[in-house]
Image (cartoon, rainbow over all chains, first blue to last red; front, side, top):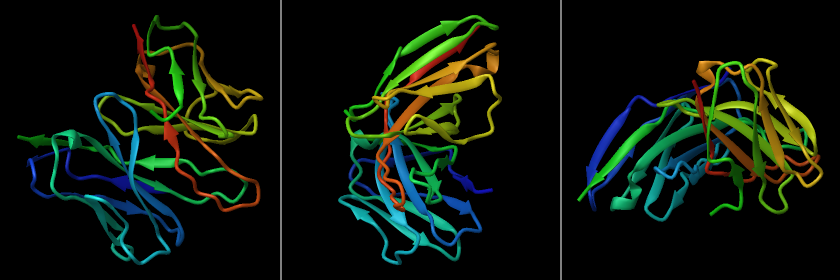
Length: 118
Length: 117
């Protein structure tokens, strides 16, 4: 069974600075997907960034980038130029591809509460 | 806004009662997944519906059941409610095609906060 571990329950960062959130996972699969989701107080899960395991290049989305280390089973999220609106819970998630015509389910970590301070 | 709507937003039920939660998926999406998020935890997969059939289930007892309708909206039913069922229930919709190793983004609704007293 796959597991996802986020070892930082809470983190804080000053506005405009950079912060890195950690995530490790355990799987015997070779092909899979990794995600970072943001959950603000509005409760709606929002996809921040996605990484396919077969791609060696780290994914980037504007101020968000990942450091994907497949051998170490590590998937950290770096937020540059932090903004007050980045304050939220951040969840790392794993998904195994499902070839039966539907999407596989997401396996989430317990989350990291990020506070961006002015 | 993702186009995924859940109702109701909040609900209080008594232990032993039954509850139905509803999810309207985003237009064009044929797959709906349900997750339970207990306070301070990450979401846990309950089950998934694809083209009106259950297509995968997490470690939840049979008193958690669901339906998907021809318009791909979905219901989550929980019978014999227990105090531990108190949680945020999230619905996520996505689009899949048979035979493809498709991985599209799952769009989440804002959830239903269920409190069992």
